[in-house]
Image 1 (cartoon, one colour):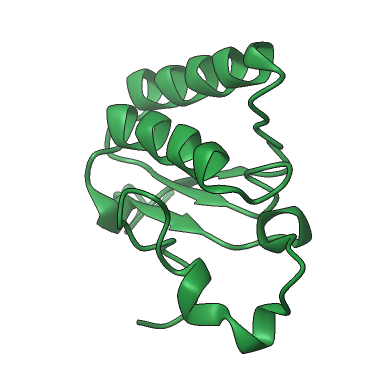
Image 2 (cartoon, rainbow, N blue to C red):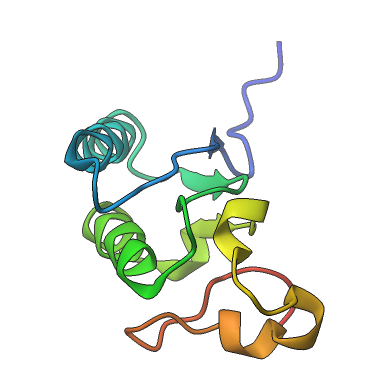
Amino acid sequence: PDSEKPVTTFFCISDVHLHKGRPSGDIAYAKGLKNISKIAPETSIINLGDMTDYGDNEEFEAVYSTIDKYFPDPSKVLCILGNHDVRSNKLWTNNREEYKKNSTGQSLRAGHP
């Protein structure tokens, strides 16, 4: 068997749907990221969308403060926007740049720079 170390490893996370009205979801998300960071501290995470329920700044702030606590290196995190993350009365295609920044000014880490 090949004993080479893998180039990278990653955990996929999907459909977290963090919502300010459901603190239990925030707790479960934090516990999950904490466990991943302990089990595999060198790993990356890929969030496959629907990090938030309604895509508002408060929900994104909760997502990113939790991610940053356990995965402070942004090169280890890739988040892909889902339909819940871009809910708004505005169209995503016309407002993509607006959605690249959340209330803390951080990039959504989605798409190309």
